[in-house]
Each structure stands twice: as structure tokens, then as C-alpha cells.
Length: 411
Image 1: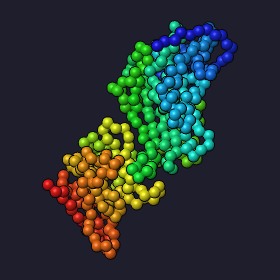
Image 2 (image 1 turned 45 degrees about the vertical axis):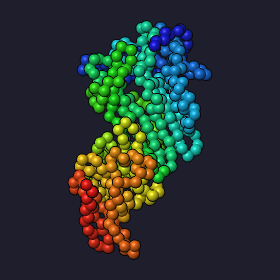
Image 3 (image 1 turned 90 degrees about the vertical axis):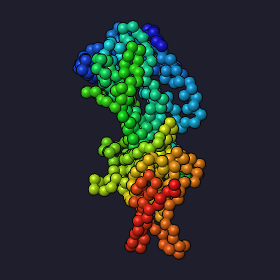
Image 4 (image 1 turned 135 degrees about the vertical axis):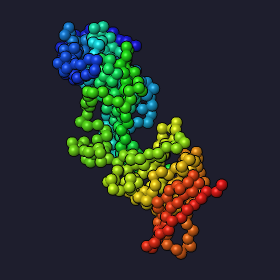
């Protein structure tokens, strides 16, 4: 869909944000891009209508932007029904990017945060358009990904999401492509109602390659980064929602994301992935000693399913992984072996029934524990692991001694 510009001459000058783009096929210096890119832009909003103000050598013009491009009707209705804050609060600043064929890419961004309240919610969006200064034509750019920036505090856990955009020529055709990197602070919900986390996750870059009418996703280039490439700076924000949520005291110049808890190990079997979150311990310490949460994902289902027994209450840990084997799947992937408490027992659950066990209270297939008399002290369980497709081994310790037990599944 294309829109033709209508002339409205105004005597106002707006700043432009040029970006250098280089590739094997075509190299542009900063000065070259500034010469190519003579238009400067500003987003205008009047009531429910949007337009783009364009300053060129031959005068200033204004183009109407279809509201649906920036505020899709269905998404607006969904947001009005259950959101803390509007994600459609677009900033007047427009970033412009020379794409290499005479056209200009336009990056429009929104962000708003809730003033007051414990949720500290915020939300925003990013939209890319394409403008042709020769034909005075504006098109949708093909990159509109819904909520791209968000944060909210729930039950003591501060979750956040933010996208950043790489500018480069990933396919070497001389045209500017856009890479998207998604960063998240995830709060993992557990069946007992508590949340674990947040845990930091950054997804590999996905690329939108420029074709005739816009940028299109091309999985062939995902995970790659061209040399050179550049990050688009934030629009209308001192720092992104990730830093605001994850850094002590909010936006902090010295904030070190490498210290944020994150997923440190995962393993998959039969369409089920086990995720261990925490902090990576020193090299001399077993990896499982840094784990503070366990969750599962299931093929075809984007939701995280947390393991409730990691904490009784927030901050009251009663189960850690210092003596665990992280490979909790049986060698053939048919069962999962999970400790329930520092003092036992272990549960063995069929992998294909694990979701039911986590969500609907289905009983485990086997309960594994050492039998003790009512007046005997509790034993500390640990080092549970599979020794074959049908047998597990673990230790129980008490009062200065320990013993190793083996449990074999029935035929």
C-alpha cells in the first residue's frame, strides 16, 4: 500500500539522525549518506490522525500516515481491555536510514510508563516505514512486531522486554537490512502461584532483508552479524526497560548485564526442554551449584512452566541443586527424575505426562525415598542421577554419615 505526499509548506526545521551503512557490495561514508539523505522528518499527531512532516530542499511537505500502520485496530482494542499503559504513545522524533537505492527507511517508536502504582508498568512499539523522496511515496516497511518494549512488576518479580535494531547489509546486495535482537527479563510462574526470577535472555539476531517493497524476514541469515553494523539508538528514552528493571536504582551507567541471573543450562528430550536458571559459578565449582530455578517448555507451546518446589516463599529457598545431576532425563528420554525437597523424596514422571503433573496435579509415576521410622531424623537427599534407562541412584545423609541408594523401575 502506498501513500502520495500532499504539499503543505511550513517554515520549521527538524533534526535528522543519519547512520553509516557499509557492505561488501557498496560502502557509504557518513558524508555520503548525508548528501544522499536530504530529507528530514517529524511525526505529527492531531487527535486520532498521524502524519509525517518532511523537509526537503524544495520545501516542507506533509504526508498522512494511515492510522492502522501505527495503531492496528484489533491490537488497540485488546490493549484497552487489559493493559496498565498505552503502547501507542509515539515520539515525534523519527530516525532516518539511507537504504542504498535512493529510498529512506524511517524508524518510528513509542514508549510510555505508568506514573505511580506498584506495577511500574511501561510499554512501547517500533514501526519501520519506507519513503521515496523522488516519487514522494510512503510505504509500510514490513517491520511491525507488536509490543517491542515492556516492563511490569508482579508478585515481587520485575519482568521486562526490549528490542534493539542492527543496521547493516547482511546479504551483501548494497541495500540496508535490519536485524532484530530481543532481550528479556523473564519471570517464571510456578504451580504454587509464586514467581521465580527474573532471568535474563537475549535471543540471536533475526534479519529482515530489504526487497522491492519492504523488509522481509529471511531465516537464512539469522544469528549472523555483518561487518560493520550499527545499533539504532533509543528514541525518547534515557535507557531501555531492561536496564530500568534489571539495574540497581534503575538506569545506571555502570550496570553490568553479565551479572544478571540467566538460563545457564538446558537439555531436551522428546519435545520437552528443561531450563536451569541462575548464575554461572566459578570454573572450579559444579555448574548445578549456581542454579536457583528450574522450568520446562513443551514443543508447540511458548509458555514457561516453573517447578514449584524451588521455593516455599519468595526468598525462602528450601531446595537447591548443589548435589544434583543436571541431566534429569533418563538416557532414553522416557522419564524425568526430580527432587522435591532437601529432605526428599524424588519423583519419577513420564516425560509425556510432565505437563499434566506440573499443571493439573497428576501424581508422579514413582516416588523414590528411603523408609525411616517416625522418630528418626530426616535425611538430606542429593546427587540423584540415572545409571541406566530404568535405574536411578542417589545419596541420603544424616548425622555425619551417608549412604548411596539405588532404585530400579519395575519392568
